Image 1 (cartoon, rainbow, N blue to C red):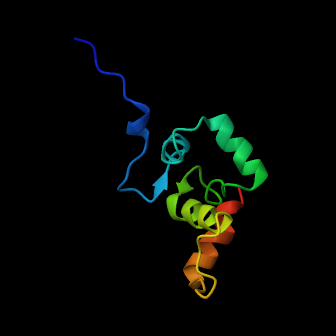
Image 2 (cartoon, rainbow, N blue to C red):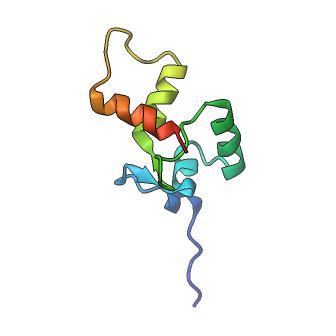
Length: 91
């Protein structure tokens, strides 16, 4: 009996805030790494957390929510959220 090949859905760990590139691509709708890179170049996604090869799910949600106009204009980010948003974009 051969081992089953993992599905792309296995790349995303819903328990982990930080994801691999394959995991964040799965989270974003099973896009390809090349599509992710193109989106990152356009500023649509923040890229990996500075100094790592991990991708912050919350930073992606925050940036995508802002771009879609879903954030509450009256709500201000906490200092941690500000730091995450600023540092997730730098690769």
